[in-house]
Image 1: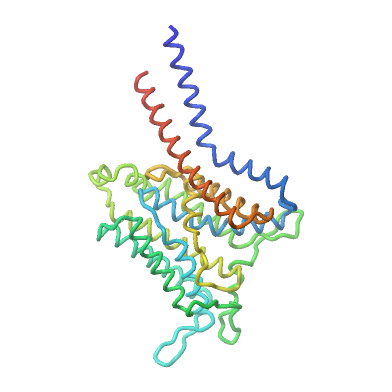
Image 2: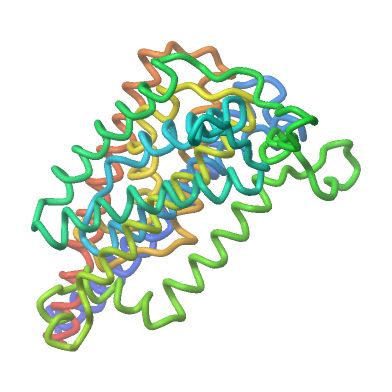
Length: 356
């Protein structure tokens, strides 16, 4: 009898532990908000909140693309470099145009956006080709494109910044700053408008969540990450799925680069350095397993808020940049450890159900 009554108790403790682990990102976000509201002046002011969410949006775009990649069991280290290259290409096209047989072609802003997004997808496709056609490990392949994209960003303007990205009315290419600074609707009872970047983050997140959860392509992404061999035997075109996720990652990174350059009204070749770590941390904090096959876009968005609020909160408190690096490293390591703990508890819970 004692042994029988002990089994339900173990099941309850395991279930409670799993519930806490699954809600860890919401708990972490809640605790961060409480802490910084207490320690940082004006943390809950509407203007401060809007500014923080604008920063979160950039991390969220990268993290959404990273989530798709990690769901297949891969990794993309090139996202930060794509951010920097995208901003430099957009800035160059805006200020210097494109030389063509002795002439200079100047593009309208919407054309520059499309060209930059296509560039991001091209680099993502390059990652996909390296991984699927040449069997290069994702870590090594994307590490290589990290250096290629960063070097290309430096070469675009010989390591210099493109400043004052406002365009020229005579060339019909004005309006670039509106991408990052424009607003639509206002927050009730305040004078704060909701920036386009936040609306775009919401739209991209909804589309990504729908694709991952409700479409055959999304189910194939989970299948590849869960068991690639079984997915192949089930008729899933594994290489096509991997190409898809790396192109999505490149596309999302290019969006982040455009928004960052637009917000600063300038582009610098080293923009986005270490952003890949923020993207990975946001995805893992949000419950995406590094081994693949498990995770949600919604969880990743919450993880991006944790990373963004942690970053801005430490800045508001005047925390040293050295300590910020230490703390962010601890957060990443903790996220991976907790992810492994959740997997172990899930295995134990499944084993107990089989025994019962």
